[in-house]
Length: 371
Image (cartoon, rainbow, N blue to C red; front, side):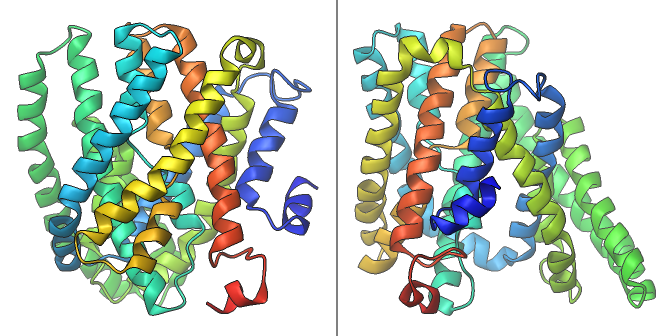
């Protein structure tokens, strides 16, 4: 019912999932009183999303794009962090709380940015490639930030954590490449006519490398992306991508449902105005900053604006960062609710802007459907 209403209103289904979570969650009808299990299950959707992204991006093209967008990503992230920090201070948060809020503003949503992107024409394929390179670099920054927060909790010095990152990430990539070359591709070649087996093998590869990455200290999402990109040049990559899309979409529904259900409505009353202001400022600022940054690296004006709007929200990493900071005793619990509400505002506002302005699966006009 919620999804049908959203489609009639020409809105992204993401908004329907979030609204349903608020409606049925602990602070709504309370039909789903505990969302922890749903959160754990929904994270699988992000794993599949990163795996499918890797499948559609060759390593050689990725390196070219990363060289082009490194400066863009670093500069824009610095601007967003500074503005978020300033708004947090203005809202009355202490220095450390404000720093974490500023850091949470640095990132854009992989899920929204790419789920609303059509890939039927060359222009949007290139737009998607630029977005993926920016989002991947943001993910790397997020990993460093998370390691720094864990080090700040006193478990390990930050230098040790960064050294671990420099050693273990190449090792993970090397292990994945060796397994792909000597095991995975040979199995695909032997049994590629049995589609059920290929589907199971793809699941095992995605989740297995994701779990290996988590075991050595990285996120599941990082491992899934590496698993995808190592087989991107395989002839079986297209079949795997099409087979796993329904699973990805199902688990992403649960992700956005859990996001809405976990919103603490009781605590929102004290911080809703500055949180909404932060969300609106990010919605207005990010497209402009990305437009100027991408134009300076020779991207077209049209692509720069479109990429800016499609990356014009806060991120699921924003939520993860404040949760880790809270576990490390760096921030007050109210910061989590503040960032969560601001992120929801950007998710809803960004989805609305993209659907109105650019081609999406639920475009508002025939012209946008044809673009």
